[in-house]
Length: 565
Image 1 (cartoon, rainbow, N blue to C red):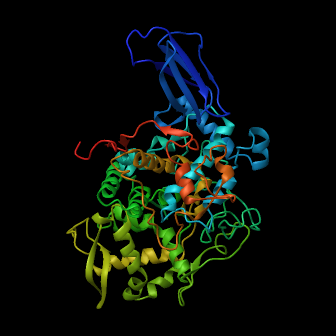
Image 2 (tube, rainbow, N blue to C red; image 1 turned 90 degrees about the vertical axis):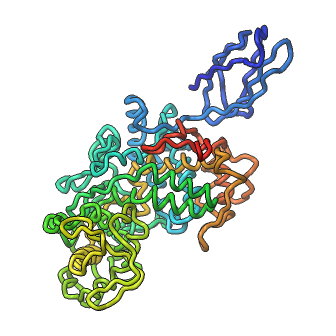
Image 3 (cartoon, helix red, strand yellow; image 1 turned 45 degrees about the vertical axis):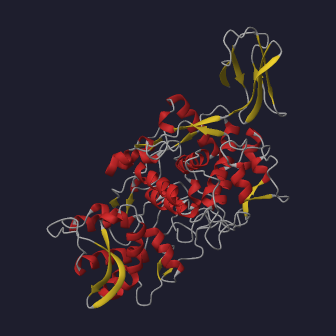
């Protein structure tokens, strides 16, 4: 229930006031004292996402005639009281514990099992990242999620996680309250516990679909779980880790200044596509990789750091570590890594991705390559790290010509000396760079295992929902602010990606009964322009408003104020 205090302020000593509050459609109920003649009224609204007509008259003259919509308030999770936090977590646990049949029987037709949401984000047909579909797909996915969790408990406080607030923790990012057992459980998991989380989601299972019949459009691991072809972990349970091959990552959360920089960039150029790139690379950044971790590797990164910590910067090693599993995916696509198409059992040696490079059948064979050959494989990786990785500007530098044992590599990023007696912030010497190249290439070609957050099936980890809601909050700020919304947004998407009128995996049913007159699609599936309309902050299809728009991580920033304020 939502209680609203209504007051006539248009006149002094108005006299007797007559009130009328009615839903504008078939849905909605409200209770209030219809006999009162007071200028102040307490009304209790029973249904969220319902519009109500509010009228007040004095001596037969209509002095108030407004329409109001009752919404849930989506709040930063740590600002929610303990009782409501527990209520939210219990409903989320329930959603991840039962299948579709049981859920519908218990909670009705709005229930959607987590398995279906995992499959939807894991689709190979639609690209949820790397293009403007990010701005429509994730909020639409969130609508499906919230319809489902509210079917379990309609009185929930909906929550989001402003992970940028945790940037102040620095190297201790994994000690955030978010990872407590009273919330989402640890990311600092242990090998002896098979990297499983403790707390509410200890028993969450991966989605098993070995014959690809139930979810034919989703990606599958060689073991038959939803996920990536390069993901060979045998565990059937949710796994996370804050470490890469035995080295604890010190790379913390991004700061709110990154978000503000993206907003400033958009205010300057009004390039919607570049705003997406900025949000994804500078704010979303390593969210998935830093929760996935990596283990059962062919090399021990912890031992490497201990041996070379005189000159090896732990932050640089962390920046490299978070990219190793994605780089294995790139090497797989390019034919340098081979992964089994299917395997059974729990053996990690026979069911593993390995080198497809001629002459490299073990990690030790990488040592037999020349320094130049190793750099040939990794120069593009270094350039990607330098150009895109958060924090890499402190540890890498772009050089037009870098000599490796007599061979020149043009226009590449290379690491710099930032620690130890050689700390001059100049390009790293060949010997040190080659030690890193050996470590990286061995890890890429013989990667071991990593958590589900590193694949399209990331929605198998319940923490996914609260972290991605922050981008919906950002979109609300953009669309509601006249400072940024100066006549709409131009859909200048990547060539070949979803067009503004392109079809989406979201159906009319997902948004009923809130479709409205703007929906033109006659078929089952909605188009992007229709999603964009449906997820507008004022749309009845959106269940929520946000608690505030002035706190973005550790920065106070008001998107509704002028830039000079």
